[in-house]
Image (cartoon, rainbow, N blue to C red):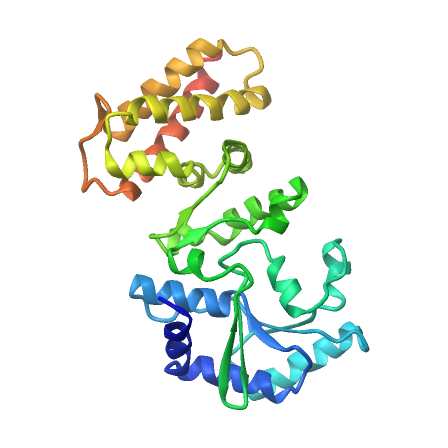
Length: 301
């Protein structure tokens, strides 16, 4: 799916075009409809879904001359009067850096480029009847169903915590089941494990496997057992410092391997149950982590 195809999908969507027309009528500087409005459309089409109902529709603009939040509220009221079925969110990006505690944005495009996920860093607007699409990080991730942090977020541990917490709160992978969460380093992936484990969302822990582990799961290669065992071991060695300070690490590693393969359906490194799809493995591994957590809690070493 390329830019022109995405535009065509939007042209053919009466609801999206109505939203864009209303936003354009506000006649605001550097005004766009952004984030989930575009992202969800692409993901819905790639999953064969009907339109996913959005929590809200994000309209952004950039105006340094009037940063009064009350103007944004007034604009939301105008839009609600025109399209009552939409929950509107209007934000002037010239002031949003203060809310987020970051350096001032230079434009709406600069603000969008600094959104949490590359797949969220999208915006569209209608100019004289023609669609303009903004994608500061390109379209490759969103059309390939990849979720990863933007470079801006990766620069800050505090922002990365926000990114991981967003994934838990949004729970996109439960709805758009073909999505893949990608971490470019083992450290990023382990941070995600820890955030998810601390929230006790073990299904999400399983979904936050490193891209390499996803590859081994889905392709059932000979290295599956060694690679995934080593990765789980590394993840748990980080978690154990918080939860099981006195644990015998050798025993812990053995428990990780035992529970992973017993409850995930692995026999001699081969996945032998279900359809063989990686998502089925993730569900089983999610159960594995929960069982192992209960086992470790009940049988401390």
